[in-house]
Amino acid sequence: QHNEEEEDFYQSWTGRRYPRSLMYCEGDIKVADISDQDQEGDYTIDYIVDEFKDPSRSVFYLVKWKGYELNPGNGEDIKGDWEHCSSLRKTEAVRRWQKNPPSYYTDTV
View (tube, rainbow, N blue to C red):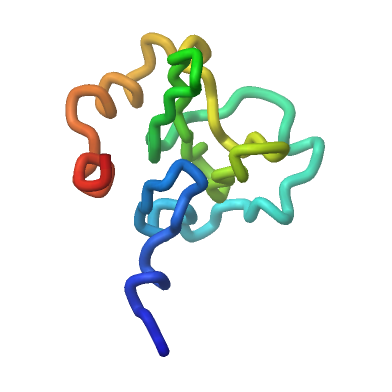
């Protein structure tokens, strides 16, 4: 049976679903093509995709970096693009997320 809804949304290990269109923009470097050299230097936040609180209540944000495909990780041994809130403190992306989280996030929490 063909389910178009699963093609349009990504099921995260957090239990949330978000649009696949948030994971990749035309021209982004794909996760599989990211080299060690690409992982050096400063990055620009494109937007926040998800938020997670671990058992100790620490907050992590899933960041879509400008120019790179989103790597959601797996919640275990692959960290992906999850960043602790302390490393994103005072960023415009976090302010936007906290002020107005996207509807796909508020619909599933």
